[in-house]
Length: 286
Ligand SMILES: [Zn+2]
Image (cartoon, rainbow, N blue to C red; front, side, top):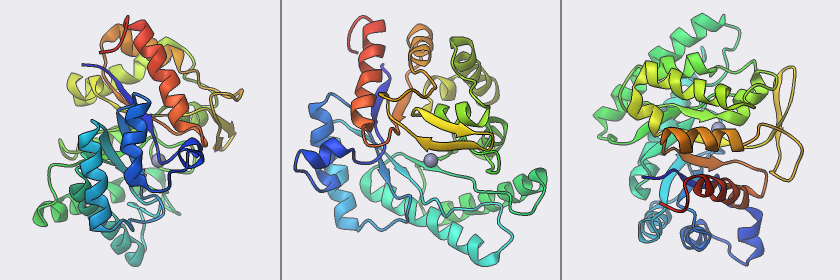
């Protein structure tokens, strides 16, 4: 067992090499020795069944593990009935696309608290999400993990404790730990091995060693202000967090996460940089 690495969406180098369609990504990633790909539905689930199935076939052929990023419009704590109905729909459409594609995980943002107090907003989000889980089961959209993501801005729901609370609703809900976001929202923490290790330990205590050992991780260098995340940068830029201590913790503890790089434009190259470093710590591939 090994950690696996890959990009969120299609990097600039993919298009510069003359490629155009996501169905070409699995082969392109395999050429780079990468093994994961997060397909972006962040502006809505628009992928057609035929395309989704074609991407899934290529991913299986080239040994690429697929996940989907759900629409940014999801808002579990909303008090607006129309937005709540749309939120349900975004989940059902993402689950349907994932089943066509053979993607085993869907990452989503919990959303903002609106004018509600944070605690009340979380209670509402949990109720709404439980109803969505029930609906998905009724529709037969099962066997796909749903992953609330740790967020980078103070005014978004999704700090580590909130994400773990949502995960307790079902064994099909596991966390997506975005270390760039954790770095931004804490004003620059997550630069040391101890800080990274503490996240795995907390996940292990609350959700079990198996979840902690196989985390879904988002990683990018990130610029932040007092309010949190400002923008994602690349590994060539000066921003934190550093990936080395995270890779050291994974290699030493035998964790085998799926690490999705969200660098701006260089996400495949930077995923490979992390993978090379991780493999060097393990004394080679595998
Ligand atoms: Zn995200």
